Structures are given as C-alpha cells and as structure tokens.
Image 1 (cartoon, rainbow, N blue to C red):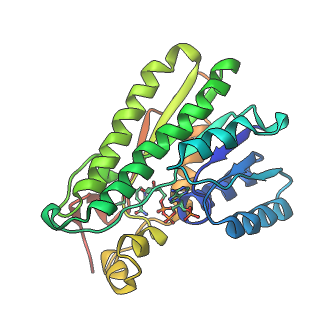
Image 2 (image 1 turned 180 degrees about the vertical axis):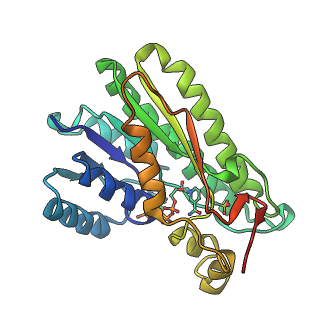
Length: 252
Ligand code: NDP
Ligand code: 8X3
C-alpha cells in the first residue's frame, strides 16, 4: 500500500518540489497551502504524471480552528498519515530589529512557529494511534546561525530547531521519527516575499553564486524518508557549495 504524506505549503518552492519528488516515488499526498487554484493545478499535474492519489487541503496554518477542522474531517482513506512535512513558512524583512515591523514579526511567529505546532498537534494523535509516523520540519541555516538583520526570522527558525529536538524526545515512545532539514539559501518565492515584491533586492541576495534549488531540498527530504526503519536522520544541513554558513559565501 502507498504511504500518505501531508505537506504544508505546496503552492510553491520547497513544498511544491517535495510534493513532486514524493509523488514520483509513489507517495499519495495531502497537499496544503492557501492558494487553492495552485493546489488544484498541482493535483492535476501530479495525478497525470504519476500513478498516485492527491487530496487538496487548503487552510491557513495560522488558523488553529481551520487546521483542526481540516484534519478531523479527513476522509477515512486519508487518515493514516505516514509522513508530515511541516514546510509552510516565510521571512518578512531583513533589517535592524529597531526598524522591524511588529505585524511582520507576528506573521512570521504565527506561521513558522505556531502554525507548525497547530498542524503537528492535529496530526500527531493519528500517528500515535498507529504507533508509526515521520515528521519532517523545515528549519533553516537561520535556525543554526544568526546574521545581521535576520533577528525575528532567525528566532522563529531557532524555535523550529528546538521544537524538532523536543518532538524527537517526546515522540520516541510512540515510534515516531522526527527530522529537521536546514537549508542555506534556496531560489524560491521566499526571497520575493521577504522583500515584499522587490525583485531587485531578491535577486541581489543570491547574486554571484549558485543557490540551492527547491528540488535539491526535496531530494534531501526524500533521502531522510527512505532510510531503513531502524535509522533516523535527526537533521541535515544542506548548503549551496558557495555558502559555508549564514555569513560566509563566495560571490563571483
Ligand atoms: P515559498 O515562498 O516558495 O513557499 C512557501 C510556501 O508556504 C507556499 O506554498 C505558501 O503557500 C506556504 N505558506 C505560507 N504561509 C502559509 C500559511 N499561513 N498557511 C499555509 N501555507 C502557507 O518559500 P520556500 O519554499 O523557500 O520556503 C519553504 C520553507 O523553507 C519555509 O519554512 C522557509 O522558511 C524554509 N526555508 C527556505 C529557505 C530559502 O532560502 N528559500 C532556506 C531555508 C529554509 P500559500 O501562499 O499558497 O499559502
Ligand atoms: C532562509 C535562508 O539564509 O536567507 O531560511 O535565512 S536565509
């Protein structure tokens, strides 16, 4: 029987690429994001290309009532979730903390931290009942290092790192394996969103070196998921070759 993976934030970037890589490898998918039309298009694309089933589940991860409702009302055949990929997230702004915008801080904390908790809280009981499951949390190099102007985004990703480690301990008796994935810079819509549509600033951030592409991260996730049952990948940090850490890179 095929495994079922629920991936949050599949309407672009790493989530979309992960959906494609997992579909190609035979997973049936529950795909989430807020942009319903993009979810519908992805469902069609993946069902046409691969022999898998896809359920679209649009909700805002910040809305705990919507998250609970969506998971509690999953059709019976979709309730045995084997894999949860907590991917939905964003950065907003890159500047000194004293110039930060409080609404942006709220959005990042509500999405990257509280959203991940809400979705996990709804899905964990389904995994615990079956004594099996995998949770993959998208952290970042920003959850391992701090860089100038990263402040609140870095804080949210440090929180993801902390909660990933906590989950691993608390879910150990339930046979649920928990993996943190920590990418360096990836060329996705993330950059445009971070700079609020300023494509020049977004391009500058990855100028002069080859960044990661979303598929590179998706394949890293697949690697973690395809280890034998007795092996858990606790975490993987995946970087562009030109980037050593959050603060050191070579640009041409
Ligand atoms: P994208 O902007 O390309 O994708 C983000 C995805 O998250 C979209 O599908 C978006 O869908 C979804 N999303 C955002 N907010 C919500 C919400 N409130 N509810 C549901 N879905 C939401 O970015 P990436 O693919 O680059 O980012 C994915 C993850 O990887 C994030 O957690 C990010 O922090 C992390 N990451 C990114 C790196 C990078 O350099 N790009 C590096 C390291 C980590 P929609 O708008 O339709 O809701
Ligand atoms: C996104 C990567 O280095 O811009 O998480 O923070 S970085």
